[in-house]
Figure 1 (cartoon, rainbow, N blue to C red):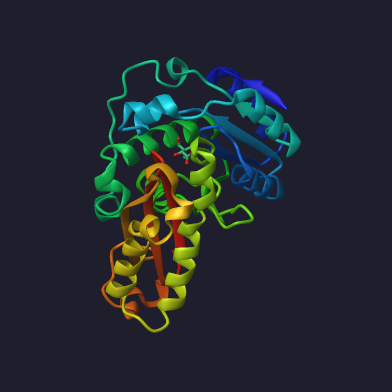
Figure 2: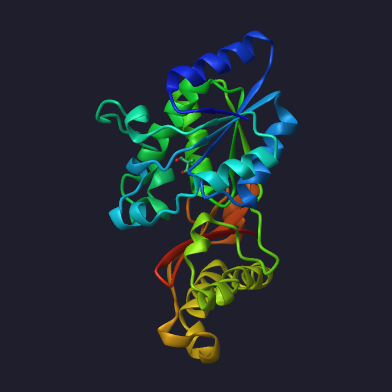
Length: 292
Ligand code: PAF
């Protein structure tokens, strides 16, 4: 695995690979890698001759300084994992290398960013778009890989590629879960043992919501999910020591393509519906998605 810290050196290596007729796939990450990331890389390895993985904690997509400071940084362990799945090139830039000048550009995504994560995290998607576009400009990949756990981010990146007219295939990859159902996330490592033990209740609740959707209407399913998680600590006090509790931020049921909230199941039409949730637990913000 070749390691690069500068844009110029990575560009040179990618250009040489392309000149040799190789296809290049890109997997952008912020490090703290887990099996979810590795599944993206495995898929990229299947589809491309050369796989480039970027590891960069992008400061401009954090609207909360504490969240940025607490974001896990585990570069050595990341590199070992990257090697274990046959990554060809890893890009480990500094903030100065990615952003030599102050960032002035902003991106707008209309209704796609007016829901769910958008209002909760002002500027977040523009910050994601800036870094993803820079990575696209540096690597010019044929394909780029993103996880479905960040469901809204995936829709935003598809929209970005349309806005900037790049010929890059965006490949969505399914959520990878722990054996107990918790969606893998770099943030999970910040959960205390007690919080980690109850965290699968998020997935259990979403699974039950999917069953309820067979016979309940959209509003009832939404209310049930929010109230089930908000009252979890009252119903299960033995599993929630020291004031541990879920604080659901939102649970929205939306059209799977437009991400606009639906009022009735039929409103989603052929696109289908998904439920997206953000929940605070033990000071950690967790997100998950269920397909209806
Ligand atoms: O999903 C992430 O880890 C980040 O938002 C991304 C796409 C790597 C951009 O920093």
